Amino acid sequence: MDKEKIKQATLMFLQAIGEDIDRPGLKDTPERVANMCEELFGGMTTDPDTHLCRVFEMEEPGVVIEKDISFYSMCEHHLLPFFGTVSIAYAYTDKVTGLSKLARTVEVYARRPQIQERMTRQIGEAVHNGIKGCTGVMVRIEAEHMCMSMRGIKKPGTKTVTLYTAGVFETDTRLKEETLRMLSVPC
Image (cartoon, rainbow, N blue to C red; front, side, top):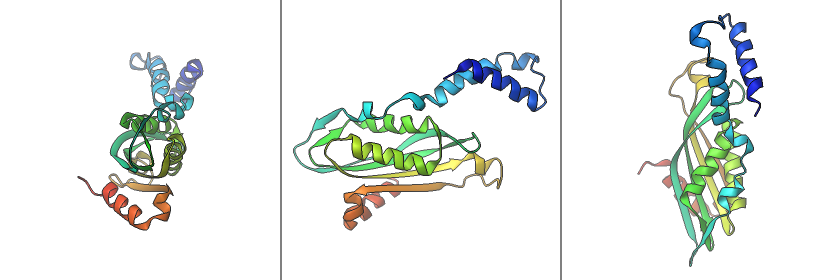
């Protein structure tokens, strides 16, 4: 990440909107914006496979569901935040990953300029391909987009829901319906 370019771009942006870049309140803004970008877009240089490759042996097949993993991301169309929760279910034969590894995978993809639809698929594919013995995955994301809430149509509170399924969650209707019910209903 080129923090110097971000600082220069921030100064240019402030000037373009008519701000006085010499105003005391804006003195450190370019540095703060560069630091913020390093944090908000840290997923650009992180490989999710580094998290999901750590697995633990299991005696029987089953399903793991991790619900309501909070996330914050930036819409690639307007560079405004969208935020919400990700729920992940995966079916396994003989191996599971650590629960924190699922949340870390969400962070990798959320910390990039994104659209929710792509992020849903990326998380699902990463889990499905990254956990050895994974036979299927379902990812459900529910989020509010500031590009809809604070600008444009201005409809705060509107939620967008996306779903990704692969493997047994596409072929086993009973399993898919049962898992969808568990992902969608608060405990």
